[in-house]
Image (cartoon, rainbow, N blue to C red; front, side, top):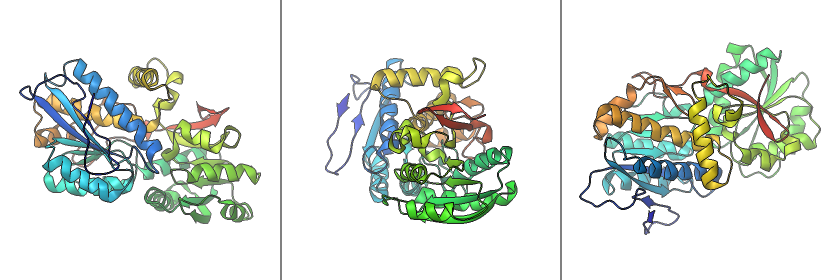
Length: 383
């Protein structure tokens, strides 16, 4: 693999991951702006690793329609301004035909504004519903929306007879967006939010907010919309305070890193909506996602000696969607890629089975979510 140095700080670029082809040979140039370092590195690092691994594998097999893939990847460190700068560079200087990235909601929103103006297909890796609502012509995404996560959680609460809950949400972009979505759909599931607390993503202790929630009468469960280190601290403090009510987290922390930060004992019993990838070993043989998630998990863990996670799966699916679109279109022109992505139907990925349309640039429904429960430091299917 070749690495290109840049005058822009905090960047990680991987160019020509196939290696060994000449400039005269045909190539498809794909761009990426990923938060491989910084506060969202636990999301972005596996995304970057996944793209690196899959592009190399793709080129070893002959590329797409006989053309090698050249990946230009920048590390925006979770900084929305850097993401915007890199998106501009990818389009104007690197001349990419599509962009993958936006590890966080903030960076995704920055990239999409540039991609839409330039009419370059962009597949975001962040969860907020604002990324694809309203539908924008060139912007798609692979993670479930925060609204869907609220709906999946409320479905599970309904099965357990839970109707009154407390919220404790991060004030970051993802946390604030999911908090709003959970409030908006609560009435549809006959859920009453009794108390609503927030915390700054940089806070090191949420005991005060959780004590207030604990002392509020009538609450049957607690939901924590958020990502990053905040939910891990909430989970630790929750355990330290001896709160015995069910605790739900968002899909934004669906990784082994969350369990490690929170502590196995504290995380035990926590439920959250996640993907098939986290329970690949538990899927039935006839599950349409089973072959793909098992193959990806095996390759990733053998190569990087670390557990596969939800976030790398988002990047996996973004590249899969672009590869499928270019193959079907028989063209790597941006407009042809965009049009082919929008016609994607029944494409099984690590996150779910995608079917896009002019009205739907997410392509997933609630069936793509699996309700998971942490037991003994690992992921299980919630019963």
